[in-house]
Image 1 (cartoon, protein in one colour):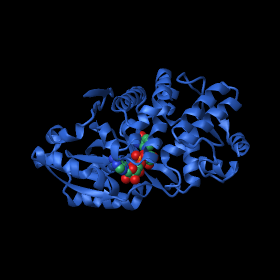
Image 2 (image 1 turned 180 degrees about the horizontal axis):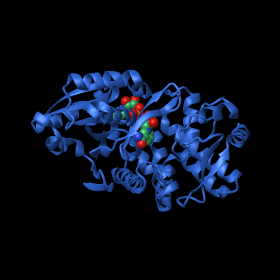
Image 3 (image 1 turned 30 degrees about the vertical axis):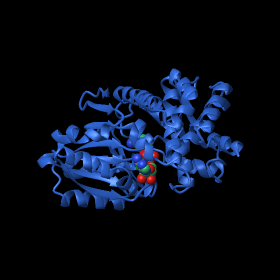
Image 4 (image 1 turned 180 degrees about the vertical axis):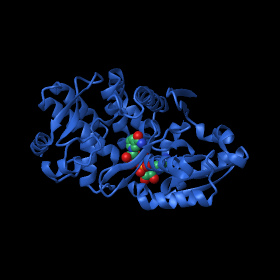
Length: 366
Ligand SMILES: NC(=O)c1ccc[n+]([C@@H]2O[C@H](COP(=O)([O-])OP(=O)(O)OC[C@H]3O[C@@H](n4cnc5c(N)ncnc54)[C@H](O)[C@@H]3O)[C@@H](O)[C@H]2O)c1
């Protein structure tokens, strides 16, 4: 078992990573199960792919659970689902001292964390991420949210989990396109924090996608170590350190908005295209060597990820895409802080960029 600590002064917690961990989840969760019973939130696909094993592991330790099933995909992160989930938790007599279990991808983790934050003015929750994206990114760091008409993740809260349990074997049932989407966030750590890890991704991409257990475990552990380090340095994104984790996300969110937050473009795919765009925009601004942007694009392409607007299925022009960006949480007036790449894995600088220049750049990409 590898244990990575998130060293937050007010709410430190551990991330446990081990292949086969799910089989032992009953023993691990026993101290968190009031009356030997747990409330679990999951989604339609995870109910099929993972819940039976999870329930069997609980039974083996003498625990039971009740579960709430969300629709799969972004539709699960809506006001309607939040209302139904919180009603269900109250029907189940959830108590403030309970630990609600989020068993699923980023959608399940994000809405469960937000529900836990608001229900009875704050319950604890445990993350058991079942997608690559959730294992390397969304389950760690305490950002919780739902989507609203104005955009993605605009209603939410910081609420750290009590514990994160990661079993890389859960990825065996994940559809290949979802695995690739999660790989975009893995690559991100090589770009913002750990240049040697970017080399690792280049060298081990084929083994990763072929299912090599050691390579997968290493990729997850190194990603989570980066995320834990960054979150501990800047829990609520005040000093700029945590903003590094948003690399490519402002472009990415605009691409997701244009494709209707739908299966046409998964979040990780949007991040991949967004990171490629961010590097190319940095080249245009004279802050990034063109070779770095090319290396990033090449690696993402090898993973089968989109790196251009047309790969992402986006047809909107620059002005329309920039309009989506106006809803970004980081917007201020007509400018957006933009992270300028200074080489793979090296420090990024933040600079305010004018949105009409971003629009002109996006038009030049078509
Ligand atoms: N909180 C954060 O810090 C943070 C960070 C990054 C992304 N996010 C959010 O995460 C969400 C995306 O997460 P995601 O990519 O995990 O998407 P997701 O939760 O929609 O899961 C992707 C798909 O895989 C299915 N699935 C999950 N686990 C499976 C398994 N083991 N086997 C088979 N199918 C499985 C799901 O049902 C779903 O259809 C977005 O809403 C994004 O905004 C949050």
